[in-house]
Image 1 (cartoon, rainbow, N blue to C red):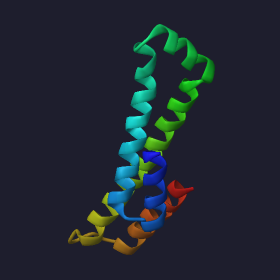
Image 2: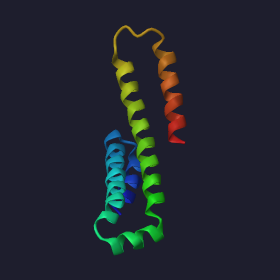
Image 3: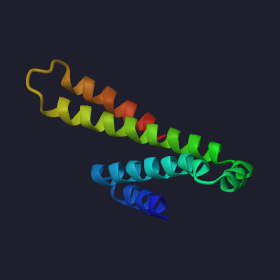
Image 4: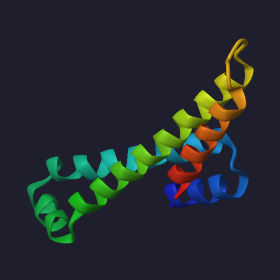
Length: 104
């Protein structure tokens, strides 16, 4: 529920802090799924039947995607204010294109 709520908020606001919060929630959920089999062998058997490995991999991929978006935003903010950057507009356009592609 927390991950879904963070996703909705990030989609609604587009705020970098909300996107980062969503990324952290995804990471925590993935780590919890990966840790569950170590808790109890009966639980581990139950989880294996339900395919948590797939869920964990999907969450890992989502976390990576959110991380790339965050990295691009940080670089964009840096380039925007950094003095002496030749071809600033072109570079910002390339970063914006990469960000648009990362957003899907």
